[in-house]
Length: 392
Image (cartoon, rainbow, N blue to C red; front, side, top):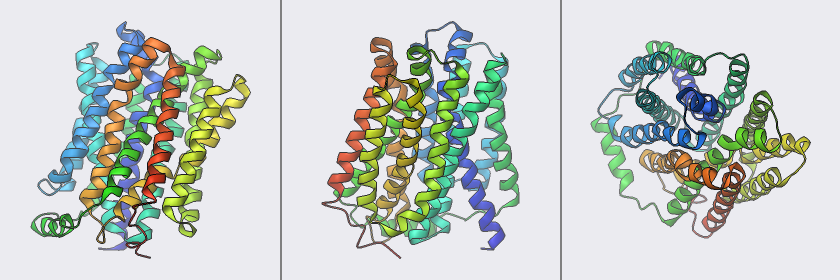
């Protein structure tokens, strides 16, 4: 593989995470406007966004096998067509059924690109370089989370239609589409299947169970928190939508900076010990955010939360890849799928909580989920195999 082609594939991975981050994170910003557009209560509207998360889950789950049947390049080109159709459907239809279908299609597109992006990084890079690259790739998720809530806040404050937010997000797939046309992709098939078969014979161990639960609870907790922050701060502290968007942007800015910092720092620490410490600090930072009564403290708490939690998910995936002697793409995809289940459950779990007890209760639930992640990472220390398989 040439250096230029490796670079093209790496940037496709970067933008694939950015696309998923943008689609998932702006939900909290646009939900109120979309609910008003369709004349529905916010709690009911949140359930509709489950179609987006379900589409992501279905695509990631199935693509572990479909990548060996349908060429990666063809999948990404087809995804571009679906993206265009979905955005047009959002812009020109006033049916809640069509909206739900479009959300599902956007989820499928996002899941396809994210699963391909994760595979490309694990395929192109080895050992600890893989963990570092995954961490940097995941930073594009947070970068999108920093940029697009601000974009959404600006558009909504100027009474521009909420669907233009999704049109702006579509620009990311335009970049993926252009890079896809220029790049040559790895060919999967019988050779890939035989390699996967060898890996599958090696037992994963109970550590994978702890990591899978941690991945699910972490994503569910993170998204359950960040999606309801705008609702919480506007109702509790009377902040406007721009200020709420800035808080969400602050979280993802510090999250992105944290990823860059930890991509270097993690090389000098044991992964299981550092992720256990980070989950404990993240749990404490989230508690400070939801317990403060001073709006001036919100920005400090949410930035601290973003920074210390930035390396958790990617470290969980990296630890998963090190639980077997030969890194298994299916094992990595399994943990990624568990995280995506957390994404799908975001509004299924938090929607009824908000409807009954308000946004603060949803944030408290997210805080409890972060504590579960800490417990899982702590228990992992007794059974982990990463020290045996850490290919330096």
